[in-house]
Image (cartoon, rainbow, N blue to C red; front, side):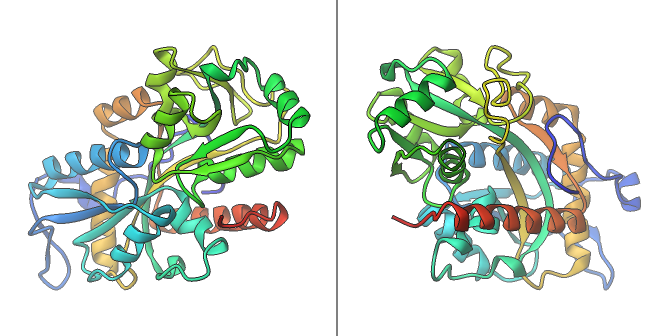
Length: 330
């Protein structure tokens, strides 16, 4: 699949079995019906953030498609490691899934000595959606442009504070990328999720955050925070007033948050194919595309093989940044 590109729909053609859209459990080879009971969907970050919202949209649609509950469970902590470790211990039968941003799959192994799980062994199903990260400052900071942010950070090293969704999250690594590109030094204030981090930026208790459009769109529209630049080559359609980093003089500043669905290691290929089939149908739904778009996210999709290749490429990219910028767990 290569690197994700915003606004490009990469949902694969539906599998042959999808020609029949009958709801409920369908027989798989060997007589297995799936799903025949509720499915647990672990989100390794708190409720209310973009990870949680993207997972719940998909879970709701799968329930409507198959007539079985897909129950979202938020298990946060340690940059997503707590919930992911819980997921890794689940039976490999398709009845426990993980929907996660990049951290637990592509970043945390470079930051934590012992994850409690092996992300390379998980079975990718698909990428639900992705959204660009944005440089966001509190109104109280008085900073109005990306150039002003860089100037102030250079003039007063290690005085500007930035919140993150947690150690190893894309907001943390996006800040590391920003500092690497600009030669600045900021002070990291990690939180346990996106919602509490944004709350403190809104309140002016932290100067800024590198967060995704999905999580911060409502705050921006209400004038409670100021978005300085989209970490991409182009502007985001939902925030046409916010310049791309390339326009603001920082073309190498490119970062997106994506949310992938994976199954435990050893999950049968027939079950993975069935899950991919269902999620492909969900992602092709105009209703789902509209709901993600309203959040500032774009549907992605992709086959399990494409998703595996993409996650591996992201692992290489972020791992190189961690090493180059000497990012550590505080």
